[in-house]
Image (tube, helix red, strand yellow):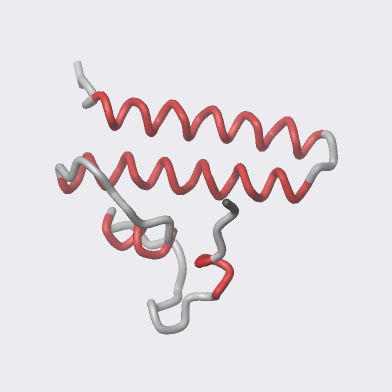
Length: 92
């Protein structure tokens, strides 16, 4: 039986919740909300994976590219130098 660390479990639960919100918003035609919650689900899933792989307790970044690299998964073909500015935009 695999027991998840509490912070991993929390990130994973939040990621699943955000994905469910994205599905509801998509069905209602709210595509900007869908995109936001999809990004949030991806970020939180990657943070859980980074914690599992690196044993870190806290991850400060919101960059999907950075998190993907830290988790050692291939997400985008961009480098840090060519990463689109959209990944630096954060909604307060």
